[in-house]
Image (tube, rainbow, N blue to C red; front, side, top):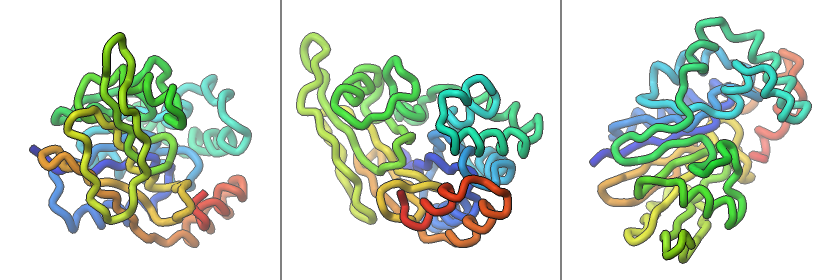
Length: 250
């Protein structure tokens, strides 16, 4: 069974994406799977789309990816995100947008289910609380699932009991460089954190290596040239907060 590199929420941060791919190349992984949001927020959407479709074995659609190809969808975003999405739509070619439009909402690779945010009925629901986690677990049809969207590295696990009740529901943050075992008597949903815009107060790019044989996951953090990404954001006139948050991982 394979070792899988899980990446999510690249958000057009080329420096972070390149650093993560360089780190992955030093390890023995069989697949690179992307959980969506290649674009949005960052300054290099075209380069990140090109790199993602070259480097990744499977990609699922993120809400920012969808908003680039569905202009009406952008109205659900806050003002700063909409500004970045308008910039992104102008920066991408028709071919780039076509590639994003072809991405599936969900996928299954080597027995691992993939989605951007949730396996429940609400496609882009954040798994911040027990209710949202339960809905996602009920929709999961494999032992292991993987999502992004929150930008917070974590594992949610639980057992499906009688009458659809989720027993022993647990939320656990992932610590860097620690091999975390996944429950063998429950289903688990792994979130590798964000490559391009971490929000766990650690500015280093985040991804995870999932071992489906050992049933374990290891979070990896990779330093990158944050200052260069910030300079690009400022030069393009994107909202300053999008650069500021990269320095503090928030």
